Image (cartoon, rainbow, N blue to C red; front, side, top):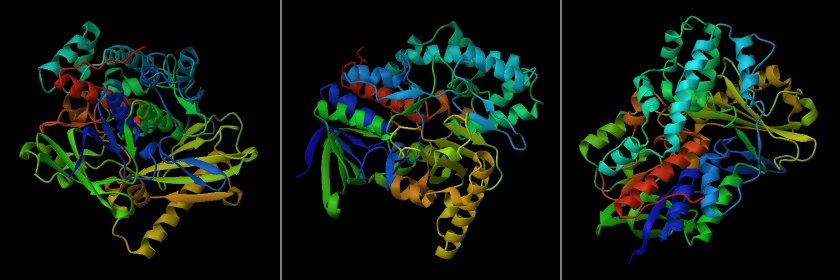
Length: 500
């Protein structure tokens, strides 16, 4: 006979940990199932000798007053993980240039930087600032998007104000449309900068990023928001959420891979394999799924409604990633760069680089970890003959090292450790199909009211994670988890509010 619980949460990344901890703290019996031997998913950590590497995510937002991670930790009565603000948030090097564009934390300093870097673009930045202010005010009122029933609509309507309604005129626009509207459409250098930054956060260039989303992420590095570097590793945030879950009586079960979901007895029967491949069965009244929604058709024993299946199948593939993990002597790094940089690079693609800070627990004294990532189509890395796969992998590694030599002055002989992960490695680590590392992309056709809802047409099945509004990043997936939990509790006649 299957074990029972109130809620089963699938996937122990940041979204799943957040959802499980919130529901357990609200008095429900919660079991969180994670296929890996540790939590975190793409925000997890691994070790190589004396070095600690962040698997995918290397920076966080939402630690500022009013930010979702700070609100969550106040709700759980726990301290925020130790972190330092990033200043600059990123140094962006365009191809052929000898000095970076630096995203300073101070708004005035960043305003002066962009005026110097992109003269004549202030109308564009001013419009982005207006859209960001209205979008941020809207998000702070915890709306539910997209709405699917009267309760959802009430939350949405309560979050509206004249500024939000006015900004709604740009719901179908892209960031490239804003450039054209402001007379900056012909500024190729600005467009290259925006393409680099936006693709990092939305998986889309300026021509494909929803204007309302893009306006907000372009302001993320500046106060009163800001980007943060965690002490120890990204796992520190996962550990804090694990503590919140345990303190509330919830259970985290590692090495439990979900293989089948079936409607049964008014709830859900979750079946899969646990440690040593032992089968397990768990009966849950409610199900919260933080796994990629593309997995649902193969997990569900009974197919979802045809329209829903068609919707899930219509989304384009998210990106895959090539990630170089290296370690070097700190004195080999150029001074004044900051901890994060982007380099416009051709082969295998533009680099996003993250460096460890001295004393942050990721490398021995006097050394630094270097993580460089490149977006790549994921599917072509599968089905290759081993010799072909290894040759492509070596070519990618050499191309990324060449980019790092230009950006940081690092020669191949400077690395104490270096390895490359491909989408095949991410598929094994995260269990995501083809090793996809992002959500659905923040194109206008998939953003906000046009996105995939956390409320599914299947009773008692809720979605959260990077494919659900408001999207990617640790702050985005935590907000998606919070909203899914609010909807679940409202369906049970209860109200979930964050304390503090």
